[in-house]
Image 1 (spheres, chains in turn cyan, purple):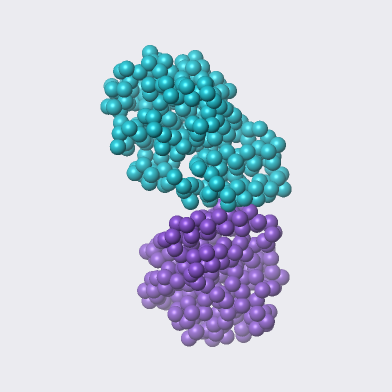
Image 2 (tube, rainbow over the protein chains, first blue to last red):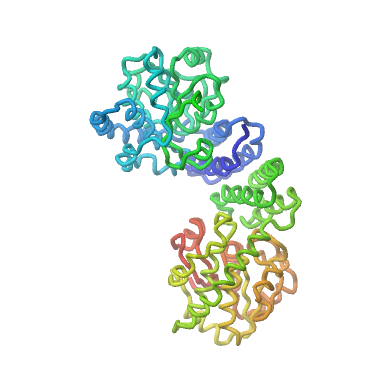
Length: 285
Length: 285
């Protein structure tokens, strides 16, 4: 799969937003934009847009001399999502098909995304009440329920900080399964790290592990041996978000992709509209 | 003035749209995107975004081996605008303050813009009837009327093909002045060239001249000696559109800028909202 052309201007826009989060120094921002455009010009040497994302956000961190430009945004997202926790639990409590709606809650959390949304919007979760009621556009729930019956080990590959609280609601509803929650090995955009997962209390209801990979979209070959074992041996893998979808959708093992389609590239790829929610298994055509 | 950072991802998006207009060959599109990103990385060596625009659209033409990727779009825009001509004349006929509304018609034509709009939208002029009724957000009309009294030579620096028809309505309303209409020296985006101006019948109501400059935003130093003389000796200069605003707003001579604010960079610069119409003289602070 080639890099989608549409991702290139979007990555350059991300570089600008990240540079402004990282520093107020215009000269540093200038240098970041120059280096980011240079990396983007080299896009044919990358396999996935998230790899270019890693490169660009690496440039931002290095040039501005800051390890995590999204630290405050992530903390605010977790706090804002935490305030929705009881609403989400009550919402789920009223539903008949609990697992469907628990998955839907987790998918709704995927609204949080500092890469695609304007960064100011990530803590604006006022839309959640109407978003959470929307049904999935694609939903392989019956097959999932069947697979869940014999599931001993379930792996969730996380996406964004804040979305983690929504994932907690899902995990708490599947608490009788042995659940592992995988996070990025270091800070990249607003993606969930070990620290964010703990701040989201995911360590209480699941085993939190680092993948060993720091791309904003999991690249299996880059992961630690420990994580690869968990990944290969899991009965069910749930992958959250667009970045993971891009890097994992070509994998041979069975994966359930749980996400919101947030741009036209992803929506066209899956065959849904922008804004739609997806719960799709790669073994069902 | 530095290049605005926001222009950089927008220029890369333009490169993609232009590459798709120019060719269906993915390999050529790949090469264009690579070269375009390289040019953008070099943005600190340019004075104005329209200079980078010239570079990028030059890459598209050269790589795809096509002299004018926007030829069809320009022809369609002129045709679509031509169909509105009588509506515009009738609209103006009903107005008391004819010169204000003639200027407003010309500004409304600035909606046509293949650089900023998605290219498919340029012939969708169904919004014109409501747009043309909107008043200017900034309007130095009283000063313009005063200057028009003693005006022997009036120069209009054109912007887009199709917008030319709207400009014709303005010119026909100032027909007792000696009007020169300046166009780009060669095809660049959907900007008006000599051929487009003649297709728009501007040669009947004005003297059409090439500026000698091919940037999508006039750079005076690059213009022909003939054009510079016209520019320097004109009693009134009206500059159309954002590109010309960017390259001419720092000029020492008096210029009236007539345009629609189509992006947040321009709108913030002038102090209006995106979508607002502007008729602003640089000698009035």
